Amino acid sequence: MVLDPLGVGTTSLRDLGIREIVIVDSDCGRYADFVRAARDGDVGVHFCVDGRSAVRLSRCFRADIWLVSTDLPDVSGFDLLAMLSPHVTQGEVDPMLDGSRRSLDDVGRGRHAGIFLVADDYRLEDEQRALASGVAGYLVRPITVDVIRATRATLQAEETPASCPAVG
Image (cartoon, rainbow, N blue to C red; front, side, top):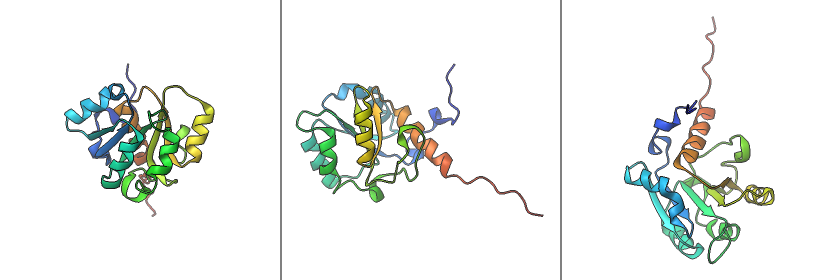
């Protein structure tokens, strides 16, 4: 039995306001789910295999979500945040405007609001460092399109005001 209380499994990323995703990781094979979504026309996916190519892309391209590996061949993902920040800013990039529960409490409040750091293994110190830097969240592999879809759908549900009772 698959639980999907928000009904996000059938919602396209484009319907949720996510049109472009940049993945910064030297191992593109880890993201087969994102490649399938791109082939289906659900989202545009762009890969950078190192920090240098990510910085170059960030200067001329706007994405809704950046998934940045903590371990890259030329720089750590944490160090890459400082290089991306002049180019990836909340206003133009991030569709996530409010916080969410779990480790995503500060989504949209930091200057790196469209960036998720992605690690192979969970480490509390890394999560705290990532969230303190202002990223949208700290994720641990495997990452699927459904993780991004559910995060965005949850935020949209929280943004929708409850109906007001009739006054009479």
